[in-house]
Image (cartoon, rainbow, N blue to C red):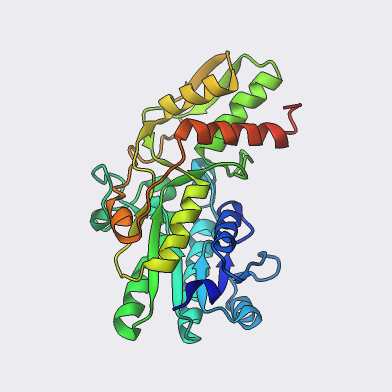
Length: 315
């Protein structure tokens, strides 16, 4: 398959990750890359999915579209997160198979892993238990694309692959406190407190939980490499290969933002999954991917981005 001359549809291509994936595709020379907004084609609706395929006639689909949020959003919207993500993934993949597209790249989530997966998470461990409760509906909905991809490959020879990324961060992230993930949420708290001369911030949980974070441009590179090179049934971890506690993360953000006030940890609110870190050896072996962005440098860029777009005051 001539990847760069193929017609490529990127669902979620105008979102945080999608914009970087589209940019990377075009940097590599892809000439026919198509994106759309949910207001144009709502992928929860099967009729809208058919219209999207009619409009673009893609040969490859990179499915990034998702309804997402942090722990609070997951606790408040489990049914919406389950239904919307399940319908988008299953129906978009099925219609792609029905039309004979040559490759479907499905983006899953680290939330699909069991709550107490041994660290580092290996792809073989994905079925060894139930996901962490606060984001299980979301994680399981996304995980069904793995089941579907493997079933369609076995029965129909359909080339669908499934990627498992860690938490992403970087410029362009969503800083809305109703739906944001931990890095943009903590950056917003610290930057806003400095700009408003506030002397205390409140942070969810105990700070003991650990996470792995991947800079969005590195994630885009991995996805494009997988779209170009990976054609196997096994899921593929996409991460940076390091682990940091939320407390340590906040220490770095406090330093980089110049916040000098008190920090109150609200242990009545959940930490989420106790630990998260991926084994990324398969991605290096199969597609040659290794994250390249220094974590502190990535945080600096993200902080500067938030300062530029913040309504709280001047950067």
